[in-house]
Length: 215
Image (cartoon, one colour):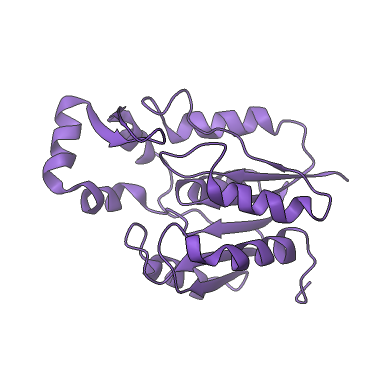
């Protein structure tokens, strides 16, 4: 049975995300190609979780088995897509997963900016090109319609930086502690995991390809 390997990037990122490329490099050394789709659906300005999930349904239609990694927002979407289609996803690797987004955004942008976003219907956000893009309020409104904390149905490894101020590690600690099939690897790093590329690549091979000692 063929397995498809897919990495889901984070907010304000894209198909060429650094973490996705690092995982792709590690898997390619073992003859496995990683798909890195662009989740800015229908665009970054009009992004919604619902559109991302629909795109993944289309992209993965007909796939018998899927193994996913995901970073931040992509980690949330990977977990949620696995919850919605548990018979096809048998391994997950989540990098600083962005669970419970609606409650974290006021801290990230500030209460005043959050109120302005809802009032004006859009808010300028840093984008992947180094500029800014007006992102519509529906991104938040739509996120509130989905489960804040997905239930992963399969063996899952989380890698999270202890110094992450974007998605605090406390959430991943609670998540892993409450679930026997979830393992948390803490690293001395921030949200970007820039200093942890070796850990990221090693765990991707061990967990996603099943080549680790625990397998």
